[in-house]
Length: 92
Image (tube, rainbow, N blue to C red; front, side, top):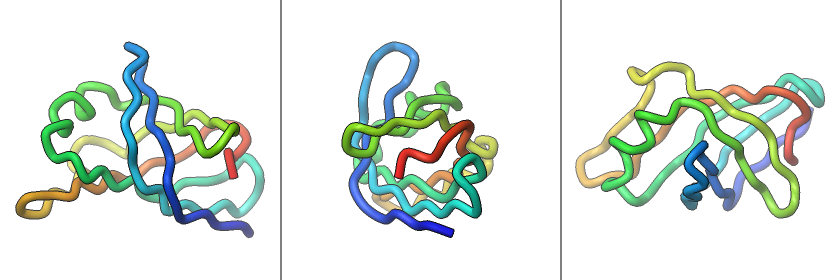
């Protein structure tokens, strides 16, 4: 089992990239997931319309999908935390 907690970029289909903090674990190279924390609360509506994306950690990337809109956890004034699961090889 491996873990990663640190900076990452979330890339959506339009090519826009957003900074986040990833807190991820993997039981095997292709079974991974965790949470992404976005500090810029103004992005939440844009991010909700884009459930799939690529998570970039350093020079590695992996496909992620969120576990549904209800899993977005807003706190007053941010941050926004979303549960994700990975597809393919973990980028960490």
